[in-house]
Image (cartoon, rainbow, N blue to C red; front, top):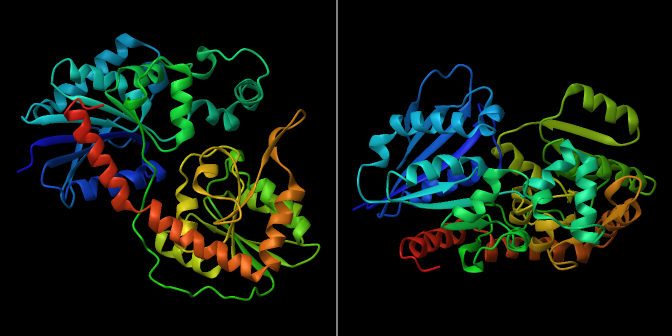
Length: 416
């Protein structure tokens, strides 16, 4: 008999697909198979066509889609308006929250903490916040000058490190302080919270992302590199993902070997034309946003995966490359440094801080690492083999869901 009402809650733009969505698909599906959970996935969505709530019965759980106000930023900055919105949401879902049994609210967007606290005042429940990314690091894409200032303070000791600089939103601080538990997907995220918040360490759990093993073909990777060398980048076009750095590094590699780079991810025609004009001697193949079934073939067909992110947590792309035993060159930033071990399951290139451009990667080091994988067959095979075993040992969906289940039980038993 199901006696725990589990509400998974997130915010998303209509039609968008990201790591959080992938995570919740896995979690909702597998937890619903455990007899004790009645799973409801509540999705707050920016969708002008959605006029009311929408319920979808999935395999083992229910998904509820709720429209968000168009001017959500104004709402978040006004506690009175936020309370009115939360009041409406609670009224719409009152029967769901009050149907009896133990209740857990598992939040996957920090600004849902106000709603969770509103619900907790009316229904006995536990709140768990899931930190998928560290908010201040997202400034790299939106306010690089401020990011660089904070980076120097946090990592280089240049200037006073004040909590208000790094945790600037009220709802972010409330998420850390008022949740019954916080899940971080990396140890560095846990360290970040403990640095600024008076929160018991036992209330913060590190649970790395996991996924289903989709690699059905074994030992299919060619042992000899053909030319042009097939390299793979997977991700969006945000500057923090470092695709511009990969292109510059491959331009150096091209002086010795011909290279083709497959770019799997949504990219505008204007941006494609710009890069193709800027790097006329590189073979660039843009797939656009493709289904995972097609992406799997990219992991099988290519010989080297390259990740040049300048801020990253528990990257699904990194896990996928591991899963398929793809030899990887990566930066050593944030969570990537926790996923990979230098010279064992990847070649890691250190990031560096340049006074003129800010956080970056040494292009010569990046190109040298790529050349090393091209030229050293035994190294390439060993790294790919070890990466595959790292995935099996540390990043399966079974391990992730079981650790999450154990956290739920500890929270319900007040055993943190």
